[in-house]
Amino acid sequence: MNSESPRFLEELTRVPRVAYFSMEFAIRDEIPTYAGGLGVLAGDLMRSAADLGVAMVGVSLVSRHGYFRQELTADGEQVEKPDLWEPARFATHLPTSVCVTIGTREVWIDGWLMIVDSVHGGGVPVILLDTDVERNAAADRALTDALYGGDTTYRLAQEIVLGIGGVRMLRALGFSIREYHMNEGHSALLALELLRDEQARGAPPHRALQAVRLRANFTTHTPVEAAHDRFPYALVEQMLGAVDAGLLRSLGGEHDLNLTMVARETSGMVNGVTCLRSGETLFAEPIPSISNGVHSRFWTCAPMAAVFDRYIPEWTSEPELLTRAARIPAEELLAAHGQAKELLLAEVRQRTAVSLDPRMPIVAFARRMTSYKRPDLLFEDVEALRAIGRAQPFQIVVAGKAHPRDDRGKQMIRALHEYARALGSEVPTVFVPNYGLALAKLLVAGSDVWLNTPLPPLEASGTSGMKAAHNGVPSLSVRDGWWIDGWIEGVTGWAIDGEHESHAAALRAKLRDVVLPLYAAGGEPWAAVMRGAIVHNASLFNSHRMMRRYAAEVYLGAA
Image (cartoon, rainbow, N blue to C red):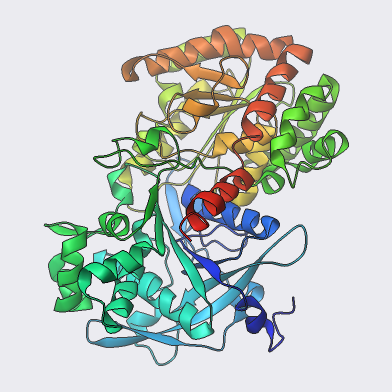
């Protein structure tokens, strides 16, 4: 489709769509409108919607300054730089503006249109909301600049733009929306706009809420408190008005406005993203689960994809057919992985000037640097780790960003640099800066073992191990999040056993006694675990399966 055509919007708005609201979307590496797993999940879901022909439209903020570009000093000090991007390079400016009221001000919102392409042609639209409009005051022009930036007032203003402004933009553009889907609670104020619409039609409050619940759905990912936005009611009243603040108080908690509660109370379908996350760690009562997945074609490296193409030609359309990877010969799996490893080593060398040995196994840890992810767990006893490396040589690659206000996360990055210096050449360890989509794709394909060490039960789901599995890379992980469902000991990877306090020792023991000896055996023994990861994990934990479940159980099920 030609986005310059005057009929372009007419084509997009011709069919009713599901509107998928997310504070972040990871569409491509050059567009830094994402901070981590939540945005990557949103991007993968939209890719699968495009491939499967599910009529959707994404809504987010333009985030002109991105999240941040990470630079590191020699001592591991994280330096945050703006990750600027120009929407006009990748998106089409839309001819429609809408307005929201924030406090006493009118804030105008423009939109940018991106298309998430399908392998079959066509695609699904994503609308990026932009307040950098001439008629806005300077402070309001900056509201859509920084992803998760600013203070509480800035964040609430952003969520007014996303939730309320997003609904108004879709309406103004002529989209017919049959369902609204909130990816976490950041967009929960869309429910306020829908409630206003129902009440404007004369519906009493209880009928208005029933009508909204027929059209709204909510996916919640994590019990970690920081992921659930809360705002003082005094601020809510100041920015939205007393009437709306009173309505929200009935939905969002007594003491302050909890947008997760608003999303839950206004949605007809609420789901978690793993079996564990469906239980009482999130809410007082169990909720249904639709397990996360990753986009198979996007996350499988070219060498491994070529092998799949030879043995499983339909795998990109039907990833469940990856169960047939059991027939792939060991030498072809190992050769494809060797090519992926060389690509990773070249990128590590380019970013850090460190040359790793392709003959030695690489244990990789890459995710957000924060306390509950425990990036330092492997390094708890440096001397014991050094002894393992002397007996069975291996290498460690680490990557990840700490939130700009997470001082503990930044301290962990500095500590990881100290551990790397202490281990020296006995266990070569390198921290690769500026973790993003491009580096993630190389890491999940080129590492030999994917390490995951969250503090249970705080893992939202975790999708990096699913990406690794698509490339035949087994996981070594604490049994939390998705790994509870994906783990088959010695078949898809290995579990880190024991209680929280003993995880570090259990990790070293499993690495020393099981993982490294098996890698040294090479050939068919190691290839068998690679196959197991593909056959049992990649075939299930993919976003085509996830998208089909949302379509059948949430969107069609609510019709």
